[in-house]
Image (cartoon, rainbow, N blue to C red; front, side, top):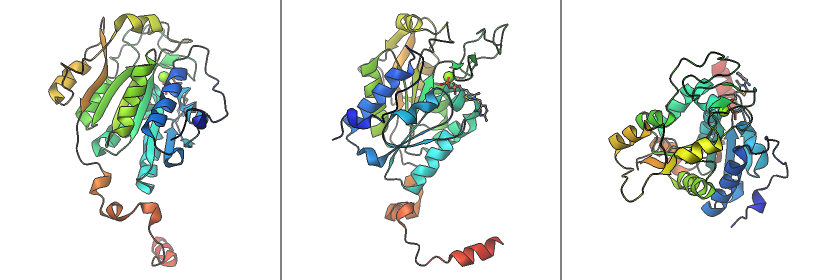
Length: 285
Ligand SMILES: Cc1ncc(C[n+]2csc(CCOP(=O)(O)OP(=O)(O)O)c2C)c(N)n1
Ligand SMILES: [Mg+2]
């Protein structure tokens, strides 16, 4: 079994002091250790953003892709070798803004992926513009009079689009993050982990104290995460109280389960002996 030290890449993160990305990175490494998956069988893929730097800081296979494109790349990796554990990470702008189409379609497919969204409700890397999850009225350099739109509700979208593990956690609660991310990695199907991640530099509204006063854990004893309607209703609770935990969980076949050749072996292991590259090239001309 690997140790947390074995997941150190040797590149220290350059996030702002106090950034909620630090505990997410620690939680991911601890969840990977507890998952007992060999680091060489793990791929972490990101888009672009402060959060998108994360693959640099974890010693697995890694890919920092384009803004909003972590899920298409993660999908390609998974279909190339479905034996790998594939984890996509990125920001709320990356996943719920420019990457929104990919987000919904990846969930419809129920690919066996873990998707961790560092939801700081702001564009961090580009110095503090309003994001799709910024609260209505949020003022920033891009919306100086306050944003007019309603924020995107990622959990409601995930539950209604076909994701089979839909969870929210908080970067101020390390044990909760570790168990939520570990559950997502172990889950067979598309797992969304939306992390409430204060941006200490640009978001002066959704701060650590803001969340400390509001966040509460869904009660595993009384809350039934298999009830889709109840999960959808719960996903709209946001205000004086903000629930964290597993909102929805379902066991159903993955996209990979429906692809015949993957039942024999991973795509990357298929022999190429009887494939004529010349013939394919001729057809393409
Ligand atoms: C196609 C494209 N459009 C815009 C950008 C500029 N850009 C880089 S990161 C980013 C938003 C970052 O916000 P978020 O995804 O929430 O990540 P954070 O930095 O907050 O972690 C933008 C707009 C880009 N790199 N590529
Ligand atoms: Mg952001």
